[in-house]
Amino acid sequence: MILSDKRILEEIESGHIVIEPFDRSCLGTNSYDVHLGRYLATYKNRVLDAKEHNEVIHFEIPKEGLVLEPNTLYLGVTVEYTETYRHVPFLEGKSSTGRLGIDIHATAGKGDVGFCNTWTLEISVTQPVRVYAGMPIGQLIYFAVEGDVQTFYNTKGNAKYNRKTTRPVESMMWKNEF
Image 1 (spheres, rainbow, N blue to C red):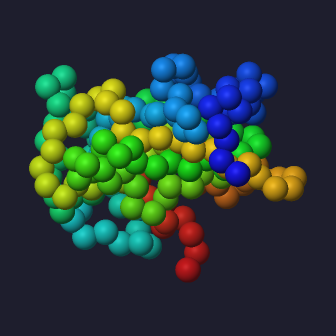
Image 2: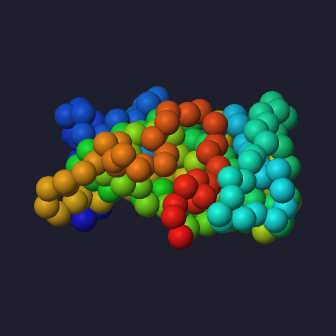
């Protein structure tokens, strides 16, 4: 079950969903619009290795915007910090973003119950497109969870993305054993 606008507001009032900053005008019928933060990152090396720590270079989007190029993976970050304790948040692109040829996540659109952070975006584009800090970039949709949660994401000892950040976070795949 996807939460409606009214239900999202009720869950925010009860503290089960946190969105900071919160702007009522960003609340849709059954979603909440999130915005592109001012920092992007790209990987230092063109060839990435899943077993190695692939370092990134962070940079700030200038006021006049930044043209993203195809065949490059950009890591972005949402302006919004979120927390959720009873719902599974899904991050999806906005139709207006998609119509510009911007994909905001490669595979990681689902958050976990207990995820407390900004969202790192895996941005790719089909053709050159100029983006701006603060532009609407995606929308959060909340699904109800059936049953009690045994371990919240923010209490897991092996959670790799728990450190609060305002910058995009690179892949931590290298921390897995395989």
